[in-house]
Image 1 (spheres, rainbow, N blue to C red):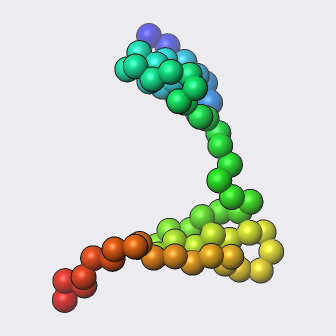
Image 2: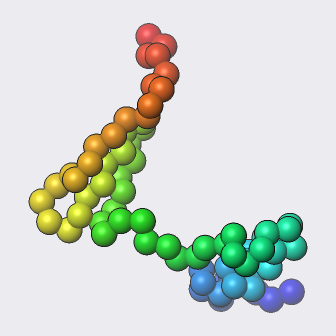
Length: 72
């Protein structure tokens, strides 16, 4: 077995993860790798998520559609 500690994240995906997903029955058309969702990071804190671009602050802040009641 190859020493995985010396491989990059991309190498591990290519050599181990993608073949395992294909063996599990997925077709290549169902697999998407390294997909960009937004122009900036998505920050998640608890149940709140914000999307920031590379300029001034949040573009979108959202909470889940069905928030769970506060247990307090």
